[in-house]
Each structure stands twice: as C-alpha cells, then as structure tokens.
Length: 216
Image (cartoon, rainbow, N blue to C red):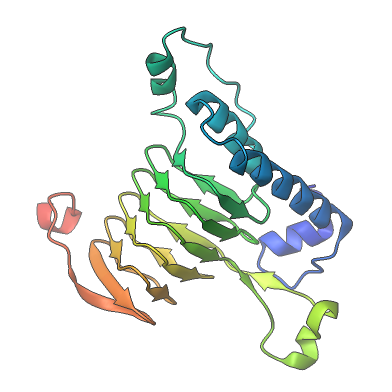
C-alpha cells in the first residue's frame, strides 16, 4: 500500500488519482473495519481496542488478559484512546490518536493526509475532520474524472473540541485550546485560546497554569 505512487502523492498533499486500486482497496478495508467497530455494541474495552487498532492499522500486540475485568480495562488507559461509535474513517492508516483522548460518537475523518490528535483531547459528538480537498478550477476538478488532494490536520494535547465542529484541511489546533460547539475552523488556533464561530475566530485567551507563557 505505502509503495503505491498515488498513495505517496496523496500523503505529500499533491494531486493524486483517488480511484487507484491500492487506495480503493485500503478504503474498503477501513470501511469494513469501521463497520466491525460500530457493530460491536457493548463489547469489552479489550475488544473495542482491538477493533479500533484494526481501523488505524496499529499492529501492536495486546497485553495478556487480566482475569479481573476492571483491571483488564485499565490496561489500555495509558496506551489507547477511548472511542465511542459509530465512527467513519476514510483511510485509517493516516489517523494517529494519543492516549487519554476521548472521541465521541458520529466522528467523521477524511484522512487523505496525516491527521494527528494528541493526548488528553476531548471531542464532542458529530465532529468532522476534513483533510481532503479538490481543485477550485472545475476544468481541473472534472467531477469524478479529475484528481484530488489533501492537507494535514494536527490537534495538539489537552484540546477540547465541542460538538458538531468542522475542522478543515491544513489546520493546526494548538495545545490547551477550546473550539466552541458548531464552529468551522478554517485556520490555525493558537495554543491556550478559545475560538468559536463560522469561520471560527479567537474569543479570548485561556488562563491556565499549563501555559508555558504564564509559567515564564
């Protein structure tokens, strides 16, 4: 998969052919993995982690089973996010999420390019991460016949993303920031700031002992 020329162009943010066989095969793999995760219902934390790792292509072996169900659940507190389905992810292999992070239901991720979410991040429901873009010129775009592209999205540690937020391609949300519910984030969010609106704009600075500027 990673050797496909179209895959490499996609990751670099160049125009690429989305109907490439390898790309479509991975999208099918990821869709099936999401369906398995979403259908797991009230499965154990261990099973949910296993299904989540199938989506993102995480091949780490699971730790040995602890006979105590609560202790077994705790084994994953420092290794994996908590993900509440249903979710929909496009490729999976370009989606990296840190430990201690909570992804709420109805998450949509178009991980054309790399999308990273740090540690201790909180997502409200119905969040959309749009890493995919199309050419603005319709002569280049050509509907289903033309190329696509993408840009990376990065959400740093300790961020809170409110419900129904949309984050567009190329955006970085700085550490410790909050994005108000229903916002459309079109440009970078500075660390330790509260933004809201469509398009999202800075409302105020967040006073936090975690902020390096305050500590200095």
